[in-house]
Image (cartoon, rainbow, N blue to C red):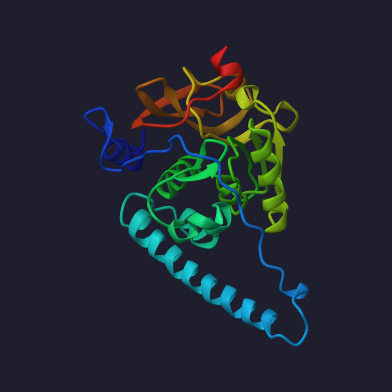
Amino acid sequence: MDASERQQSRRIFIGGLAVASLIILAVGVVAVEFEAPPTPETSTPGTGTSEAVQQTESTHETRYAEARRAMVQRQFAARDIKDPRVLKVMGRVGRHHFVPQTHRHMAYEDHPLPIGHNQTISQPYIVALMTQLVRLKPDGRALDIGTGSGYQAAVLAGLCKEVYSIEIVKPLAEEAGRRLQRLGYDNVTVRHGDGYRGWPKHAPFDAIIVAAAADDVPQPLIDQLAPGGRLVMPVGNFFQELMLVEKLPDGTIRRKNLGGVAFVPMTGEARE
């Protein structure tokens, strides 16, 4: 474990609880709906509606950009997120596009938000942390398990060549796929399915991020990790730990416990 990861471990885990970095990813929530983006081109000619909508959207985007800059400085750079590529991409991806319209005013706050189907979008800090831990390179290939609304996949897409993302909740998978395409993330492929066995067709992966907890790291995922690759996921039931798995160039597997966390449980084959 290098110095930065030892520091992260200390900050995440204090007395068995996620205290200093408060990682809370899963709560029971009611279903919510995303609102489709406005379509000014369909406005009635001569009413000025199109121009007004465009001005409103521009104002909102400016505010979101300011909130995003504050998020990067206060939630990431002021803590232990130091990778400049990660900071840059977190400052570029609009998290407000990945939360329901009713929650967009909270899009850049330091906590998870509901996205429907009893699921949440992860706390921004944990997305940045897990992304930093896998050390993606521009020519790399990533596997994202637990697509949710697509935010983590979008972040990974800004750091590597290809992203493959799996979501077990079919409506979420379909919505995320459409959303990522609409936003221009052409290097992301989303499919509905159980992520326990990964995506062998596109393996090996230089990075694997799993946004749900299992009793142990699934062996199929370790098998699909490229030599030199990294996998990060929560492991455990009631008491969970963030686990970093490295596959060294000679194929040796090395595991590092980075401290206590709280994620939703992995479903499907992981629970059989």
